[in-house]
Amino acid sequence: MSEAAVIRRIQAAVRKRTKADEAKREATEQLRASCREAREAGVSITRIAQEAGLSRQGVYDLLGERPSS
Image 1 (cartoon, helix red, strand yellow):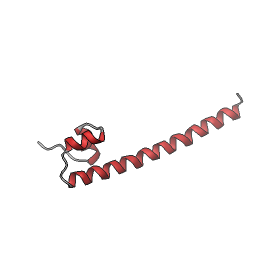
Image 2 (spheres, one colour):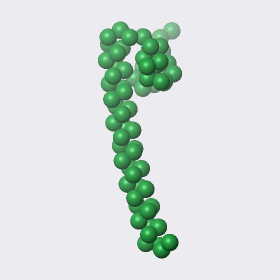
Image 3 (cartoon, helix red, strand yellow):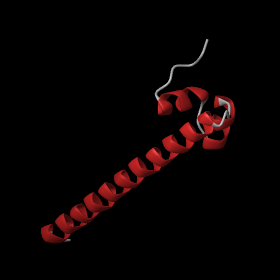
Image 4 (cartoon, one colour):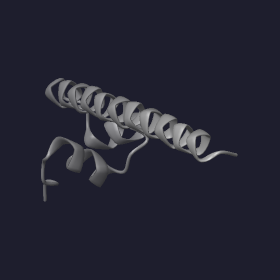
């Protein structure tokens, strides 16, 4: 494979990775907003974690909250 072809493949991979990173950021923001709405509606952290496929600590981290004692 020529150098030019390899460089094009690298550039294509970079573009794909950039799009994937942006999609992940957007999905994380959507998840954060939904979790906040759930908290405001009185849904427990445990239930949010179950539905989101996260640990309870993961939900607290996502929301920027500290676990209650």
